[in-house]
Length: 187
Image 1 (tube, one colour):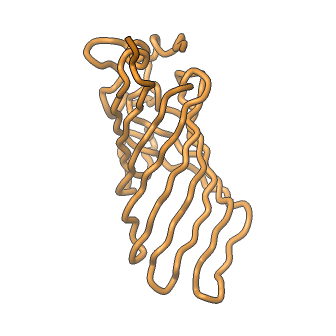
Image 2: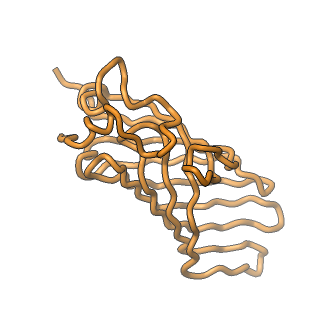
Image 3: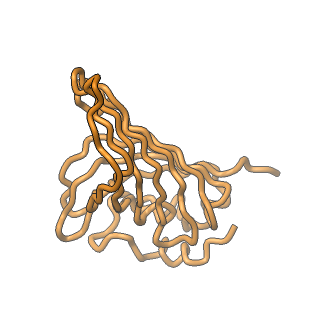
């Protein structure tokens, strides 16, 4: 695998004008590019800064009192301080929510295009509700391009205002934490 632009990003550039929110650009003094090829596990944490939502498709309430939403699209930004992750997210969401008891699920198909890597994360994410509250959010993705062979797993929680992490105008979104898993190391 190649990570040509990653070394420059790991040595100084950041995806956020106010600086990264997590010091994951280096591990044990090595640039992220060499870590990605040598270490089968890289942890990250940060935020998803919510963007503008564009509703496309349909929404309706079934006779049983279940709200259905299809093909909601929006753009977000992942800000973690890790150049293998930080970038623009495009997602498409489908939701089913029982309006009587507040249970339901949102399924998202999303891709994250890191600013510093020629590749994307193709991710499937699930958000579960109970009593109209989010009780679990997790996703799993696989890398393409320079991220090929890597797997990304994450959880998210607590959508709230994020001062500073989403740029000078602030933002709103959940905290995320996760791990990038590389292929098994062979001798």
